[in-house]
Image (cartoon, rainbow over all chains, first blue to last red; front, side, top):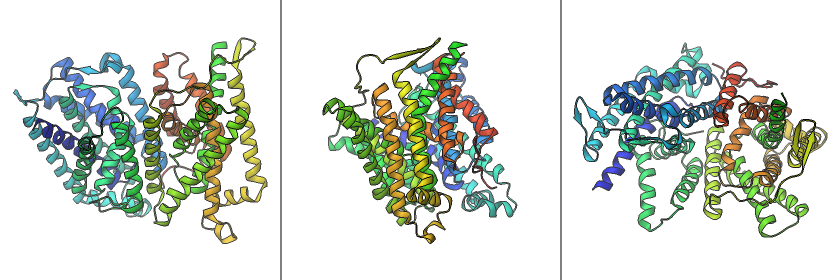
Amino acid sequence: MGYLVTLLTIICIYTMLTASMDLILGYAGLFSFVHAALCGVGAYSAAFVMLKLGWGFVPSALVAFAATALVAQATAMITVRLDEHYFILGTFCVGNVILSIFENWTDVTNGTSGLYGIPVASLFGWTIAPGAPYLVFCVALTAMVLAVKWRLVSAPFGIALQAIREDEIVAAVLGHHVRHVRTVVFVIGAAMTALAGVLLACYLRYLDPTSFDFPFTILIWAALFVGGSVGTVGTVVGPAILVLFPEALRFVGLSGPHVANVQQALYGILLILLMMFRPQGFFGHHSVR
Amino acid sequence: MSELAQLVLNGLANGAVYALMAVGFAIVFNATHVFHLAHGAVLTFAAYCFYLLVAVAGLNLYLAVPATVALSALFGCFIELGIYAPLRARGAGSAGLMIASLGFLLLCQNIFAIVFSTDVLTIRSGGLAIFELGPLTVTSLHLADGVVAIVVFLALQAFLTRTQHGRAIRALADNPQLAPVVGIEARRTYVMVMAIGSGLASIAAVLLTWDLGVQPAMGFLIVFFSAVAVAIGGHGYLPGALVGAFVFGVLQQLATWQLDSRWQNGVTFAAVLVFLALRPQGIFGARLNVRKA
């Protein structure tokens, strides 16, 4: 039972990350490579105020929102005008800078040894126990994020996003301020990843820089492409498949030091096969072209 | 002062290795319009080939290097024919090709980790010959890095400008719609471009393996470094990639000048970001890499 709760909590947090990636990559067509690092900014800033100032979940989450949105705004100001491939390179550079800060600003992040002893989440004086109660809490927040995302994309804003993704010149001619819309969606997406980061911090109760390295971003990309970009079902199914698939490998009897490598090799094959045979993923409404 | 000059010299030597990678990446990116992240997989493949040929099979260097280059060129052709060509036939665009390329990089990196473990494998034992230039020192390998990069680049440039095949590659890079009209077969030219690009990567791999050894994760970072070098130099102009790589190499070393070397990555990429913000078209700026709206 505990094992199942663990898996479901992880799926929940990944769903939140994938949903925000869907907003940025699926709807807006921005291939963001800083996703994991931005999640880390949220996680670290929340963990810092929880540990050093003893703040509760809600104020810490608000700090994480603010910090991540600020970093995302700065990122967007530099990178959003770069074209498709250069956007990846620009966000790769930002990711390196952020990771370097995680590793070396030891007063705040405790460097490569990581932050220990992050308290369990508490809401207005009520402690949310790890395990099933925390899972319920995560599910509720994820549902909220999915609802916000659904509302956002069914509004004219979402249609503008897709129009810009398909043809930015036509969208600009029709009067959309393309760069502004992209910046807004990038910052909103980053705020969602910040919330996921806070949940991750309270779940793991330990943070180190390697957890927010680029393979994590690639994992979220893979989750999005497997589930299918542009849509809600895909952002739940994709992470579920990617989390449960390695667990299935374990039941087959594969274990030892190579499990992580076999997993990642399979993600690689999955990405190639998806692009070849089903570029819209299992439940997506948009083909990656 | 001499410390600074020494850092620049070391940076130029590292830049020479990045230059071989970056020029390979640039020629593939220009001609086939694929954001060829699997270039990193080619680098790792070549490095392990070289390691196996020299350290395990005990081959002489004069045989091992050409064999590595040939095998890597074949590997590049395999990537083109096995992944990119089928994807293009199914209508994949630049995003689909890039994701598949990333997938292939991930696949190779982890296969190598499973087969060879994640340890660094080295082939060279003992130090390198050191030359003294006044207050500066340069190792024989660093000297070789620079010479090889320049010679290979000049040969490539001659090939691209003086031969029929080279002109076909440039025509295809320039205008992929028009080139087939004048009888240039795109599919065959793509295979040739991938072979050349992979050959360049394999030379970088040989130099890196001789210097530092080989490990599965080396390709991922270096392919991104070389893509950043291409961005610095300016996409669409091949000498730009060479210059960008030297600039990036020097920048990486200068980042350690006044600050602790643990900040190297952060400072380097912050500088690159400032550069991209001010001059997104790169030093030579053949193409403006900003969005149209």
